[in-house]
Image (tube, one colour):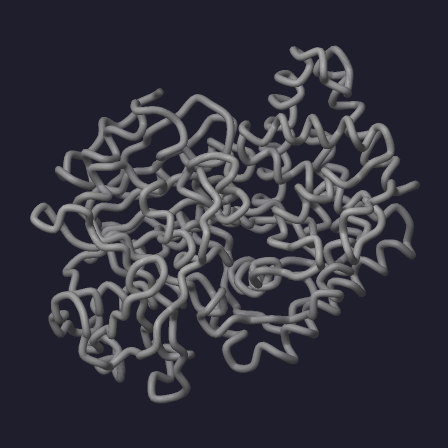
Length: 541
């Protein structure tokens, strides 16, 4: 899940941002993405998976042919989607295929799109249990990219027993991507003053947000109204059927937990072995989401400062309070007087926006903290290059000004359908003041992140709602006590709302826990996937 103030908001990578974040540490992305991914995986791959030719509806060219399955009761016109067979073709990271789904599930005879898939087959075919569908977060994290790191995102026993299957959700990556702005336009959007101080700056922020919204409206076509999490969850059930699975086995991180709980609410009888790590509860309002992330990033920043001041190389002070004040003053100074950037071909100054994005990136994993300390040391001496590089990694951007994916745009397309918001500057100002009382460093950033959804061209009519998924199989919920992007209390909240769930707690830092914390968390999850043994509710590690 990503932080995002018109650029930093539920983007769990995203476990999200798998490529550069992989250099940080292993996680189930990112993080965040996640996103997803929200920003953390263990190595930088050589090649990205490329979906092969061929599409839904063809007979599989490798693997076992899938069993024909029926669409959900009460639906009409979905039979051809549920009965399609996947044409798996060899690609750089495994086997790739396309899944055909309707743009609008209420009009299944209308337009369709194809979703990109990647399958990395089980290491031990004789012990194979089935397919494990994975989502790294975002919204907007590439499940195809995430699955290409199959050896890192799940434990060895799971890797041996499951085909790891990732898909790019509708509107994301290679699945009919929504692209709203050119690279220069996206630079301008992400570089807007994230904490406007005057009426003129506030109106400029609203105008910049509207440029994004108008770009999405102009280029998004009919799909723009149908990239909600409910739509993506329905796609997952078509995927389950096309994989020949009676039930869906699933790993969702960050925003992927929202996608997973939404699926469980729609199709409780199809829930197999489900793990939701780094939770985004489905009933949070946009305001609650922003306030919670503000508190989460504030706590993560304090943890970073506490670690930094123990080292003689720390450039920001000798106490936690002193260090936090230094960071707040530093961001304000960038607003008044940016510092030079010479390593980027398009951006010549490190502004408050880019500096904050770089700092936020490092909060997803403590493995990134030394890089942040080095970047802050350089910035203190007038060199913004290192902090700009951290910001580029967060945004999936190269120093040449090219964006590798569309997560920084599609995140709004999804969020704004899921959680309506406001562009009323009086309300935003009031929220900013309230958030800043509990999160002085990040509160106003997150409050202003509401504006793009306040000017969004499509209103879905959806409101956040609790999901119980009554009748589902047991769902494993995982929370990290100092998770910056998905605060721990959200994991407790979802566990209590689900009718059949257990909670695992990792007492630590960073975004998400499975495969990035310790064996105390990893082992029971591996056993759950492989043996069906439900972990002990309340386990703390």
